[in-house]
Image 1 (tube, one colour):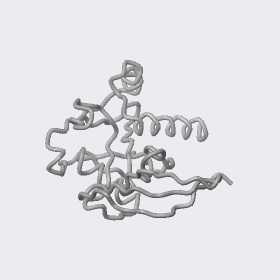
Image 2 (cartoon, helix red, strand yellow):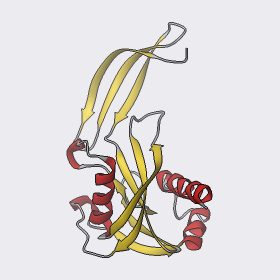
Image 3 (spheres, one colour):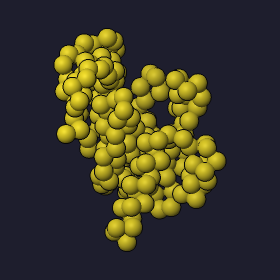
Image 4 (tube, one colour):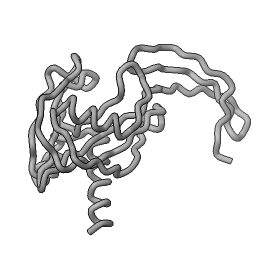
Length: 181
């Protein structure tokens, strides 16, 4: 009960970062319908934490037409499947130049389960050392900065941080800290 059966599937668009497919479905009551699905590889999001500070990246997000602050995050190039911990370390290094002595997995996130199959894993990075970033061409306008957790929370409250994955990841961090004392 509560599942849909896929009756057909066709890819309608593809690029190096994503595919879009249209599936025919049969609902529980026997009626037919369609579902549009965005398939993207799983991503890793990293919360770089140094004492009471978090490290954020800011970049122009083309679909929104604006610059946004968020935690470092991303997928492997060309829709490759990369182990989550390895991907997290790579995203952290590429986007910020930071290397972490410890990467602790905080949990999974689903990006937009009503329209995308993409899932992510959130990592807490500590024991950080600075180095040179290795940004991809699309990330050349990226800026990075440290923020106190108080300022980060104020940025969320003021609508300056609106990235759902970053806010959800921060909630996972808060729950982790509550659980571990």
